[in-house]
Image 1 (tube, rainbow, N blue to C red):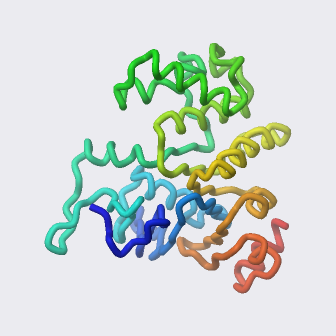
Image 2 (image 1 turned 90 degrees about the vertical axis):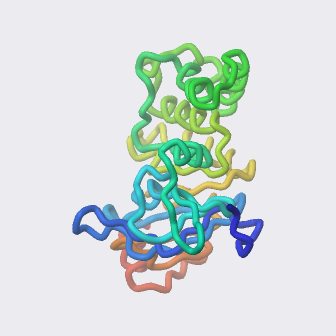
Length: 260
């Protein structure tokens, strides 16, 4: 159910998110708001909780405490009489379609062509007719600049091309929010730009996005909202250009001094 107190222009709301892996306290009370059509970029050292936070938004990891809402809808639970009741796996799978996830490694099916990788989800999960899925899949491959490579298999594509197929695959499920977990970290430097160009195009189209990245220049250019994380907490957040030029936290300053 929608939260009536939540603004109509708010797409993602995180309230007091905690995540434990055994005794490891990976997320420590994260609060975050991402507006509709906003590009939120998370930076920080390895192990700071950035990727875990994305996986919690997408329900690939079950949160230990707190609440995640997408478009006002509580994720993973339903609230009745002030108590939370866990949703069934089928209900969670349905909710998960609200988010599209692009990983560091492309995770494409090696035995399927680029087009088949893009259409698999719509056909199998959303029960879309194959002809319609193929039409939409070709449109999406064209959007990421791969219209002429629809029949190639992953091993016939460069890393950048594979990642662009992965982006098209995520878009094929018509998500409300796109999540990118260091989408260029596994690429050779000369292939990074082609993937970032696709993400820039998505940003211009008004897609709500959260990206975990080490590409600070990209964060400055495309991000609307910059988050710096360390030790499972958001240390500082703000407008990217202002925050990168004049960080307020001593920890943020120390981190940026090493990466800028």
